Image (cartoon, rainbow, N blue to C red; front, top):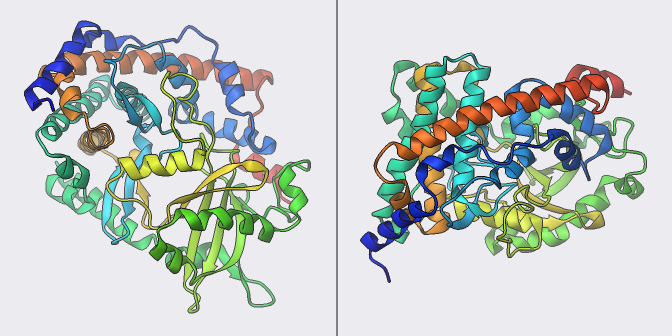
Length: 469
């Protein structure tokens, strides 16, 4: 077994074939974004693709969030040190957040693993750094502040990775960031107040708190979820947004769909969690439209209650092939896409959702399952002042370092490659600046395609008006 010094040296040696300054290269950007955007719509609910495009039109950052496939294509033309390990695959700054562990502790980490796949760790870091640059520009922060945010990401990643290199495997595995820890490191009074607000908000976001907001009783006294177009609708009622020829429409009712989900799902849970789940009975199942990049993929929410009518909301989210799959030589050893997401999440997070599992739905579509909403919170970027934004950059950079150290077991090699100087950070800031500029060009091309009718886009209000029964 190699010593720590030897492992760091091996990482440093990778600079010979991949100098750190070469990471400024933006990749395979000499391409038309439209065919890739169109390809990413394949297999989605057709009527919802226009809403997805509408959400992507909101801003260059919204476009960036919804076009992970574009950057995966571009990153395939960038250099890397040669270390391939499980990565997040879509590590932009809004895919970090707070969540509850099974022990009801509030932690902060990467919280979206739909695109997890073996790949170069640099790809995650580049997507994160570019997202800070693009979001900062969208929110009218100065160029100097935008660069500062990017440097904070890389500097904290660099420092934490060096620290993880010195730690034993168990120490890295058990390491976590509690939201309460951020109270001690908040750089300003406004940042401290923002952390307190986030913790209080997370503690309120429970199943019981959600129930009266989205449900009501029918004439028979049975609980059911209210339709709220375009966000929530029942699959087989007048409000449905499924296409008439959709294969799920042949089911006529949601119960067979739910039963199909549950057959495989239960077996992916630990025995004690299966026992807990058995104490709940399903009341309703609806389709939920989520996010930006996920709009048009299938996501369903089931309302279950126990014998006290206390609720449990389970989310069944479609898992498609990772956007990275077509651009990396490494292949995932897992065939089931839902299992790929779940195992990636379990590997990279310090603790995961109590009901995290996977299943196969009708027509062989793959899904993963988790609780909806349960004490989950994300950043409200528009409320951040400069210092809070910089602090958030530090937190995200540190969390990504922990994720990579835990998943790869190669903190020493990564740290040895990055080194102690600012050379790597300088390159990634240049990358972020160049990629933000190209994202703006892609966004303009996307806007033009929507105006000219090649791509159809509808705003939230127009879409809801179009489909209100």
